[in-house]
Length: 298
Image (cartoon, rainbow, N blue to C red; front, side, top):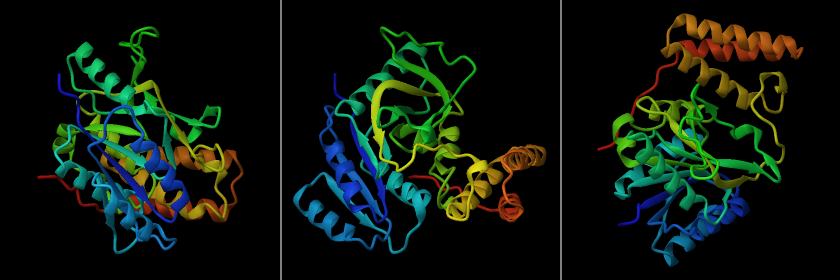
């Protein structure tokens, strides 16, 4: 039986030392990689020179440098488009601070194929369990479906059904990209991964492969919580609030309204300063009127 072919996608911006480790871990996988598409979001720390030299000496490396920083959303949009053109069966997507265990991809592929065979359906995606040192990474915990243990077997099948996941090690079937298109590049950062994997999972849920492990090299093990907003991270939360508000708007005004109320209750509970609450409410209103271009692949 012919092995499933995989092209990896890495998006990076000014994290030269980290992306070196990410690439090394991808190339060291027990499951072969056809190509590694690296989107350099106009880095200024020497990443361009390093990747150019790497690509010149390794035919598997495809180095694409953007003219400007388009954020993770724009980078993954471009990276998945390029990976699709390689013709690989699967596209393995990750951030530039994701270090995959040697058999992470092998476990993802096995989990995906096992789930498809067991269920008779095509899962939307397969994602890894993301670690932060010896703990679970709080930023990358996927949301389970109501019947998440339907195919789970601790001895035979180490996966469960989920609604969405992050872009820190997710395996996407080529056919699903053809079906749902690409991530929303206008999001820039935050929630692009959740929105996209929700789209991928419309026909059948994704799977969370518990024995496929990666390490997320974050400074703090901290999830997304609007009660933790401060002046330093406000710019990120603005994008998150706007993008998530846009998504809820697509489900109807009252869905957007419910989202906005819940976020305000959370901010009030954590006694967030009024000035920060105002900024985030502006972002949620912007999401209500935001327009995006849905892009497809040929």
